[in-house]
Image (cartoon, rainbow, N blue to C red):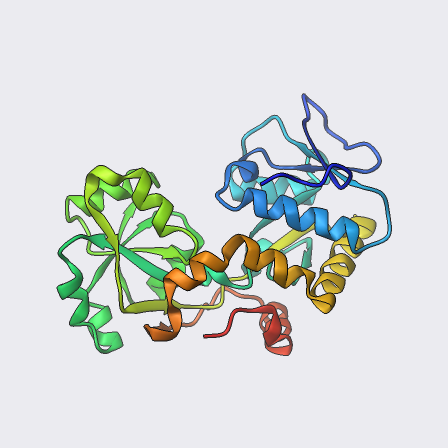
Length: 284
């Protein structure tokens, strides 16, 4: 998706440790995520809905794991902004902008399954039935710990891409994916004969937030104000639906049996903020 010319400038930081005035350094790994273009558009919207000049995004040279990126952000040198699914541990020592950028979409999960296995999932009527299904997950994903805490059976892999042939080879029964994810993933793995399961879903509170260094008051305040202004005037919702409305229609959550589970890894502050602002989240 093309970005507005004046609002967000994307470039590469080669060996830079401190961003210049107006620049915001983000993780190189973040820019390869499936929703990176959407986040860039959100940052552009923030720049339009808050006081200040264009926000220039610069990309770190180094690849970083999520945990490493959060630590670099705490240290205050080499990274200005990071976005990720939150947890009480991730929030420690950081300024958290508690406005869910994806409206909780990644905590609503539908399943990729083998073609022909729908009959197996059709037998799932209760949560006890669901606990008989084995799910594929990355070994260190935040969702993995949430599903384990709920008592669900998991087959773990260190490789995201490796989970697709594992599913095709029946190492597990279903691969839970965010509402925006399964169709493109099935297309990319077309030779494996995978499909989207039709009638059930998992749901848990798993907001994705912006994180900044706790001393970076100017950036934190601007992000928070810009997001709140965009929500108030409807522009955030329009942007969200422009990117994700097609997938929400395909997911058809209102006609699915939704199993809601707890996320025990959220901070009390995040739980309170989400409870106080239900309009920040998708409702099914």
